[in-house]
Length: 175
Ligand SMILES: Cc1cc2nc3c(=O)[nH]c(=O)nc-3n(C[C@H](O)[C@H](O)[C@H](O)COP(=O)(O)O)c2cc1C
Image (cartoon, rainbow, N blue to C red; front, side, top):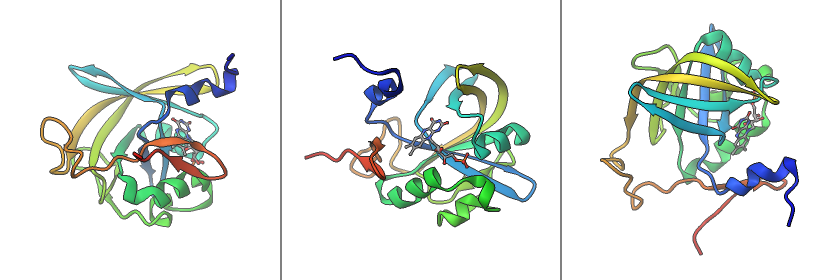
């Protein structure tokens, strides 16, 4: 079956969404992202494809820094809300989604308190590719819950596996 251009990204599902958060002045915004990759170990670097039309992307460019948080399946509703509410409409989008946050350890970025793991990243460069902007960040701090030692313990961490937006966020759960 031929796959339409607009559906190609769905071939990658299920994917674990990360929450990209940024703060500039008093404004806090955040959005779930699945178009991301770990692109270097030394130094640790990540890349995210972000729609430049979105408020969170614009705020991240202004801030020059962002955090990436892994949430688990218990935070399904918060992830769904972050995907539907525009950061332009509220002062603190994380709070609106019921996600309390603190300032980062190494960078001035919002860090979700109940996240399973967090990366604090300094924005290193951006590059436009098609309709998205590739944000390349250097990781300045990384920490995780006790469910991570050298690998994840999936008895203690139940990942949210995104399978697409079908009149709402859908996820894969093992039969
Ligand atoms: C699970 C999930 C993953 C997403 N991944 C991305 C992504 O990688 N890049 C992107 O630009 N938008 C992505 N989106 C869409 C944004 O999260 C959504 O447009 C969000 O509302 C943007 O927030 P903003 O208006 O505050 O910028 C994703 C949505 C969902 C539900």
